[in-house]
Image 1 (tube, rainbow, N blue to C red):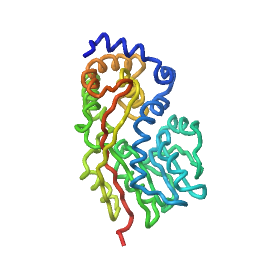
Image 2 (cartoon, one colour; image 1 turned 180 degrees about the horizontal axis):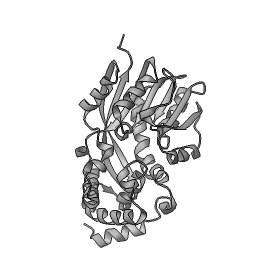
Image 3 (tube, rainbow, N blue to C red; image 1 turned 45 degrees about the horizontal axis):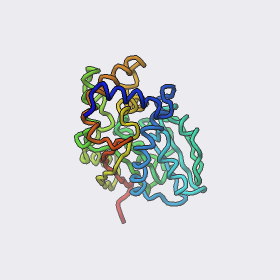
Image 4 (cartoon, rainbow, N blue to C red; image 1 turned 180 degrees about the vertical axis):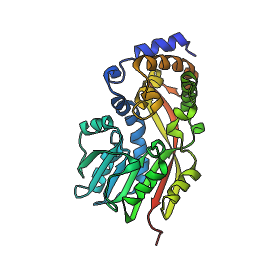
Length: 292
């Protein structure tokens, strides 16, 4: 096993391995590192359950840098509507700068999922990938999702399963919470809606008539394993308040301390120039009416 000094040397040597990201924003880091390695395969799983149809009116809620919107646009076609909403304008700036896909033109909008300013019954399909757990009022957001759906519409949402199923992130967040002297709940937001029963109740209480939840797992290949902590913390600063409020000096100090503590766990998943591990999600398909 490499020493802590050796691991620091590797991290320094690999410092420019992800698009010279020291000058990049958290949103750009997210797209380059987390978006391409995690959001892209997660999108494929989400859309397998959504089964978008040509001509459908689609809302991608908490769209981030737009993985779901870009993949669904060609599936629904040029005559369809795709609206992509996120509360973070920096994420939308990155999304707009990426090449436009074929099919529907994507309407990128800044918006708050808890206070959706969209007409009632204006969408046939609402997609929300790994966003619901971040909303300040999940119940209000779920009701808002239902309100913008047509009478026979459906929402397809994904949320990560329990943190205990993700030991690499568990080690990262435990060390982070300890060094920041904050509760785990302030740093593990991504995994904070991990129980299927809670997700089921949330959607049922919002008025959905039929809710089906499926557990799915898939493999992730993250590049630059020696910079896993740094790039994850910097990318997560786009959505996790505990990371977002750190200045550059505090963030660098945190990364150095936490990297040393997580190296032993990360080494289990190292495969050459990448980290390879499984991630597990719940996919909820929630319909506004009962099956006929």
